[in-house]
Image (cartoon, rainbow, N blue to C red; front, side, top):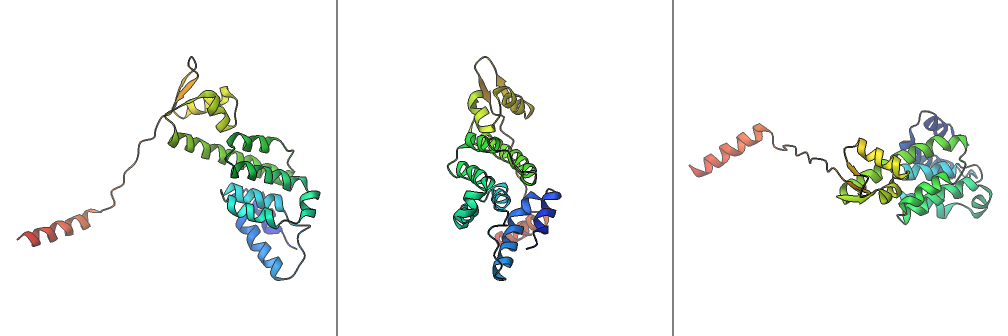
Length: 197
């Protein structure tokens, strides 16, 4: 079984393509009737789904993994622990699951990249959902210490009030793009003018 496309994608840090590569390889290997369960990089496959925010596919993959693999490969179980936290929206638990395992060299970079992507997703969630939030809650959402979380959001323009332990969210201005170009507007004007006269 040739897993070189997965290895190459990991080497060049194309983590957003891992899930698709694994899916295609799994279909190819399964169609050829090759037994692959013992050698399959399930942890990488699960992490690939988490990286692209596809928890449904990760959950389905988890259900298809043989029990023998789950029992013999702790990294697969550790990857699924992240999935469980994502599924239940236990935001702080995601970071605990990431830090709670000593990842293999193959998975370490991918887990670090996922952690960064997940922090950015959480930042966007906070940006859209809150106008103010406590520093303590902010730190839980971002998986950081309170000082690091306050520094992170201050760098992004949020106002940190250390006396009240509150952070004021800086909403980003909504950009509105003109969807009608001037030639269409001109034709509409001529049409309306024609109807009126």
